[in-house]
Length: 96
Image (cartoon, rainbow, N blue to C red; front, side, top):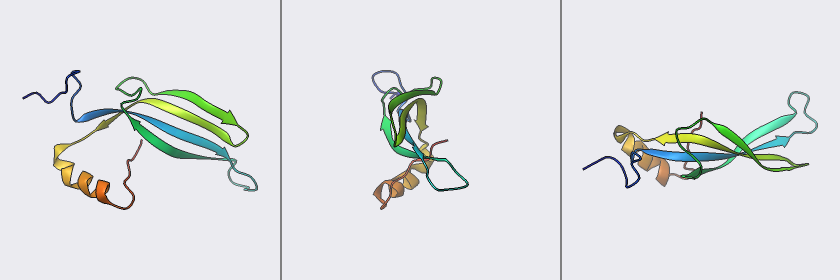
């Protein structure tokens, strides 16, 4: 049996997009802004293409961006770690 779904994409690779926020920081002498990840969307505009940024929203509270082109690569030897991450109190994905 093949290791790919109906569209020819390997099942151990999931296209991802990441939503981030840039927020201004007031009254701090060391930083003027803060970045944080708001969410990860599987299958939406992702893929092994170039990383691209799309402005979703802009206002006085900051901006929100959709970053596309990421791929989550899963390794069969890490299945137990994935399981414990998913059942934990704070499931996480690391983006780099």
